[in-house]
Amino acid sequence: MDGARSAHAGYIRAVAAALEAAGVPVADWRADDGPVRDGWIPFDLARQVRLHGRPVWDHDEAGAGWSEERGWYLLVVDDPAGRSVRTTEALAVATIAAPGAVARAVASLAGLPGPAPPAPDSPAGLPAPAPPAPDSPAGLPAPAPPAPDSPAGLPTPAPPAPEEAGADFPGHRADVADPAFEAALGRYAARRTKSVDGWRGAAEGRG
Image 1 (cartoon, rainbow, N blue to C red):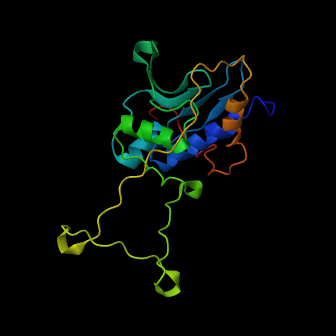
Image 2: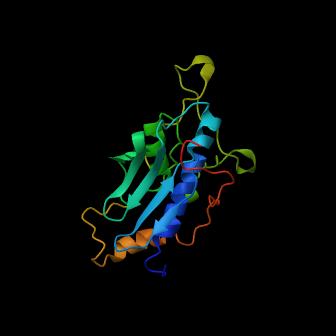
Image 3: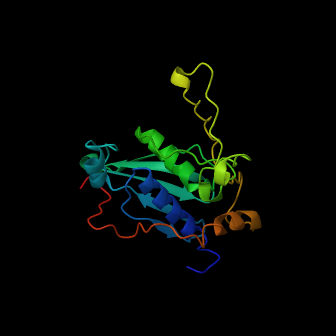
């Protein structure tokens, strides 16, 4: 793949790593630089059963697919009598959604808890630290005041962080130059993510 046409490979790989972190084992990942670029992340169904003690995806095959023109979708395959029945369901995320957002969407469909969304405006999605108290020793963060109605004066939990942002491109076409689209994909090209290549014993089917 040439550099321009393979810009999506880093993105697909980042989503595969996010799925692994969310408890959705993947067997591999692929990025195709055909006329319409796409990607495929097959789930490791045998490892999923070992991890959760039950068949989370009760199908012969399952995985997450991406196309630059249609975005993310879930694909499951059932093969009764060799008929290979394929069913797709679009994921309610942006075309170039943050990897964690894709992982949460897949985990939700699987009935898994999924990763928590990161705090807004924090680097690498890390929780934003509390500002230091001006009068605290060594500039340590000030403790949160207890809630008046909370039991035993326990601090009130922080409100949930908003969903991390993605980049959506409705109407994007592969045969039309789109610098903003390429820039959004390019953000993932130089990122280092945990390897999900060639898991030992990985299997795309039930195993």
